[in-house]
Image (cartoon, rainbow, N blue to C red; front, top):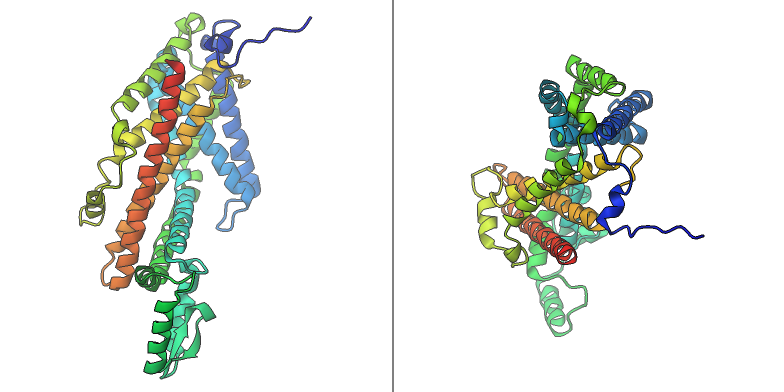
Length: 393
């Protein structure tokens, strides 16, 4: 006889067995603590120097993942755990996760900004990679010649005035398909220096973040956290009532907080055109983050708590039904965060004293482009969330 399976989209199929109680939570926390210790051992074995291997980077990511999940479990199900222990443990886990995340954040931010500059300027290589060659070509070019970026910085003879006029007239009559607009040409001039400036600033920040992470992993503070996680891998400080308490109402409360936060977002205007006032604010002397971004960042954190609560309720074996809509919404909010932080980095670089006007112009265009990406991410989240609401209503 064929077995009858519940529909995976039916909420009843998620908990068709026994009611998940504190014992399930304890198993989940022990599993995450074990993953933390395994990642820590792998990080030490693969090396953590300035030229750490890919295995070391993957171990750091695994450390962050397990630390976030343990912290989320302590936050959502704190009423079932020792309160004092949770209050002391959560900030330490947040410190570990945040410290290890900074180097990766600066790396991806630099890559994102250089890729955007490459796309906006229409250059044949990333701006940060060609800045030195172009600058060298201009400095070494003799009189009567110019440095041709398309030729790799080699000196090319300057055309005479009649020749330039004839070329201009021919271009107006028969414009080539790949001809750049004057604005694109102005952007290309400053893109190389803008890319070099961003590369210098973010590479320095990444190097400092790497050193900070190494110091943190060798500190007594981190060793104290690792010792507590090692104890958690074998003994979870549950309350007496945890063994008979259903986890699902606490997980539903986490979902309710997410729903309330999303309701407060301006989803109706999430797909509206980019507001130029945001660019004015971003390039102003005020370095405070954009005020519209904070509620979206909060929703991203609440969505993560909701996902981790679903994992905890499913138990350490990870039998939770994968909700593709939640994954899509999470990706949209991660994209929102990355674009917002990239825009802030471009605005910060534009405040560098004594930069050339063309460089400032390129950074301004880059900032506007990333704010457009912010709006696009909000629109993507809006579409995903509204689709989820329609299906569940």
